[in-house]
Length: 306
Length: 310
Image (cartoon, rainbow over all chains, first blue to last red):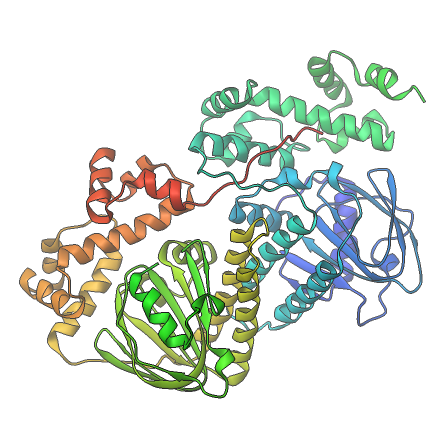
């Protein structure tokens, strides 16, 4: 999987986790489990305290014991025993304080894994949007179940000789993901009837946007991913939402930019680089075309009240 | 669910209330066991089960189980595993054993196979079964997978039940396939001429089903008269050759429709039908209902979209 070289936060996290190989169990680059349930690894060994990581993959962290203060997208939250948190991709994550008796475990799904699971299950990415990443306390049963599941998965992955280990890893990934969805009481009412092909295309497009909006802005790219023509993609999105594909993309990219302005107060230059724009001036024009205001004007108008 | 499966199971379970041990999910998937009968695991002979739609996975924990599948006697011992493919006739004889089993409807099974990549010998063969002998440790692993699956099946009120079950089945199958890959299959070979024709016909069918639906084509391919093929299918499947072909094609089509990724038109083209309307009529002739009806009833449901902008 190609990663955007300018996106230094992701590379930073990947390098840290990837090179130090501290994980307890893993399946290729698909999924990896980390914990200190039976060892002395500290959470701060994995995430340096007071350093912000832009998460490159989908992480689910929970505590068996102890207390941890974390910051997700600028919002500081405390985790205690039985707390669980889902950290979606492209989320700013920081570990602030860790109590010495902390027992933690977490699962990291690679981008590929999460896309695959969502595809297999017919679920949608938006269920794990950053806005939803709040610390949640599990019920006793839920906590027991996730602990058992984690242990089972961990042991299962240790059987490296199994020929169909990939099948196992994928099924278990799906299984845990569904468990999480249920544990978070996310509204997942199944619609009574099968959806149309067109609607399916539209939904897949929105999913892709969630994943690629920070680096791709061409309708052609999304159409290629869906194996359809850009024109058809635009027609479909127009039918279902009243907006065409390029409007969707622009809205998403600008949405991401605004999110960054709000959360991190970072420089326009950084945002422009992170969103894969060639120059800052190009980003400014893109922003203005969509919102009617330049990035600076927008910041002044919306965020500089306090 | 099959009628015969309905009547057969209470007899096997020795109970008037099979739902206690026989758990169903939307008629697409069942799991059953008699692990509660540890002390006296007697299984009474029961009426013949005609299995048209399902993949059976049976693992014997202790004891022996005697079966007749399509006229072939099979004796399962402790730690034996049997995978029974669709289009089979199963008779259970008097046996003493504790076992656990899953019954998976063909389109779900094929969907899982397609998604995860199957061993070659499993996905294609119908009218047959696979018999393996596992190590006790492997049986233990399968049992824990099975119990997890059973527990989910019993929890009815949870959302995303179907997705959970499917990944649960995936976990069980991944272990099964891994064990099958390292274990020698117990072979049942026959010297009877018609049986050989039948087996060759099935192999040819699994290779050409997408484009050819005429008995003559297969007769030419196997270099035997069409009559021989029909005689063989009549004898071993109790159906005519064209019926066997049609059912196999429909069996494959259902798995694709179930997946809900392709339009009916695309499926019709994929199976080399001259037109979509012809395809619809063909489907209705064989199954009794239209593709659209099958899809609305069974195909993978996609969950409803909620608001997505931050």
